[in-house]
Image 1 (cartoon, helix red, strand yellow):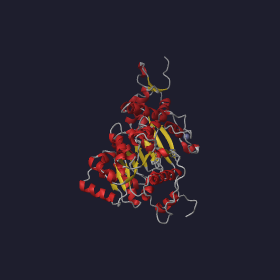
Image 2: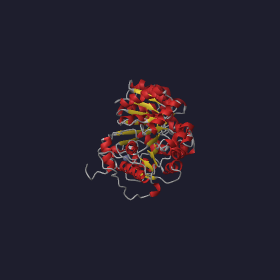
Image 3: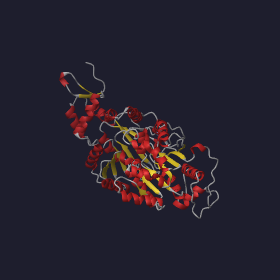
Image 4: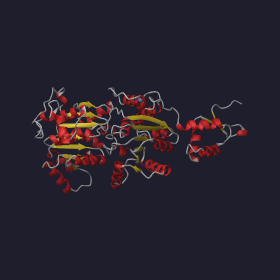
Length: 507
Ligand SMILES: [Zn+2]
């Protein structure tokens, strides 16, 4: 070992075979170990490393010792930040996740690394639970994976003080803000879980978060004692962000899938939509490697789809955001949002599924007439405001998308310089302010003015082989453009109903 290697990196090399840690990973781990030593929690270093080699440098803030809020983009290696300390700390690490698929994913990854994690979840018998608690107390298992609801059930909650939990980790901590006040009230009780566990080390991770979200995490998890904040750069320089206006979003998705690399995920706003779109794409693309995923699937079905997609090199998955948080697939090349997500956080998180291997990837957000319905269905005023910001982002063709997204997050750090052609469609000068169907139909009616009524026109358009539209598709698109004054119908008798593009002629 070279003297120049710090002990945290040396431990990562020896225990995980990693040769490089990101600066923020080193910092988070070092903070945990420093706080452990200050709290007299045993830190056990492997024999081949010098005993107790970690010498904390002037801690900048004694107040927040042991409490960290880590803001890291998805795929930036946050698991290592708590897996490595778990091997060194003399006690158990409790990791809280919001959803089962994340819990299962972490369990799998821990097993791969040689840990023997235990999972606390619904449907376990009392004997099972007693056996799990024994495994933790005896030190056979040093990792507990759970969600807040399970930890708050009386039987588990009563056992928390006896489990020698030294480090509590809350992953996806932004759920406190997003879900806590609506359908996951247990998220507001995490502070109580921290207290009951007696853990002096608490680390909350959030992929992306704006100031109000961070304040809520502080107040609900850290009970208003300030946590040290560590901000990893949320900019994902290998993702090219684009947007695409569509009157017919399903067709838009189809055409994007033809031109973009796979594996690909298409995010939709509802379960039903994923099923319908998957069926449509299967028919249109004659694609066998295509499945859908949402929270309403049976557990076995979910596992099967996750496994299939995880291994697939060319697959297309149509999913709700329930998949977004689930599985760590590194080689996803394209993420398409058929429906606009409710917040910039969700968008960055979901589009951040693309290109985790660091290679070039695409994130494309569709916008169009469907957005009005999304706005109308937004659960509350706050969501409506957030959604409106995303809709403005999608329609804006004047601001670099990377800059626009980061400024929506209130992120004011340095972002990496990316070549203009790889940055976004705005920088590459390929962003279009109009709906994609508009150009084709405008051209068609310029060429054939006053010739066709709606159904004849739709048939002619559908016959243009390059477009691959059905008569119904064409009819819908023409109708929309008639309603928005891009196309017009003649009103005077001789040519009544015939369609033309451009200004209405003066009589
Ligand atoms: Zn750009």
